[in-house]
Image (cartoon, rainbow, N blue to C red; front, top):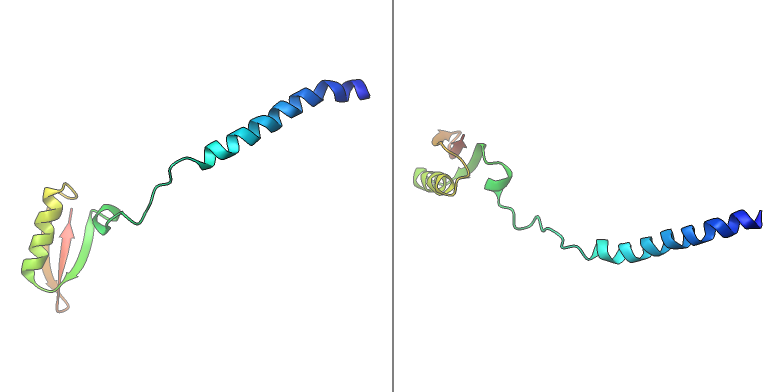
Length: 87
């Protein structure tokens, strides 16, 4: 019985050592921040807004188009507000 324990002890020690060394290395990896993600990156296609005027809606549409967030955009006046629809 002791002979079997003596054979597995070095393997168990190596596994424990490996886990101890891997723990700090895994936690030292850089973390990604979700705070820097803008609304356009989260939902590039769909409905955005509301905007206070048609001009501000079109400006947002052109900006997103030039940055490559969407290919087409359209501003619509719905329920007394301007909305930007993208595709």
